Image (cartoon, rainbow, N blue to C red):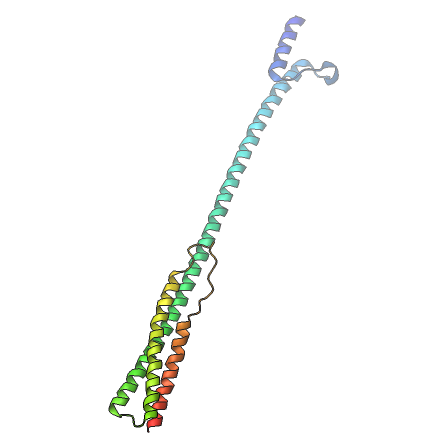
Length: 197
């Protein structure tokens, strides 16, 4: 009978992966074998649980990285949209200013033309000053048209991505010149009227 039990014990040890140490353990061989079977089952379950947790953490980390990347992409899109909107508003303000300067130059030119038609200027100095005023006003109108085209081109040249450097607010020399020419034309037209009286 002892031989039969030894074979069962060896079979249990082989299945459980546990070797019995009778001298050190102090437990009987059947308890050791049962503990080895439960221990290996617990070890397998622990391994499965750790593997599932590791997989869940990896999935969560990948999801968080994707969300972070999406948030960064949305932030960059919002910055680009803000740049585009600011450039559009800047162009609209400059275009409105140019329209006002052009309207001023045209009104002054037409008003001085109407005044000269109704009350002809006497003297050469008044006519020369009025000619200079009309030249300034015509140059102001030409500068308004040139500046308006440049403003439109600058508004279309806004960066298409954030990788491009943001252009500084462009200075429109034609727009600045149009303002000064219109004011100068107005002053010269008024001076010609005063000189001829």
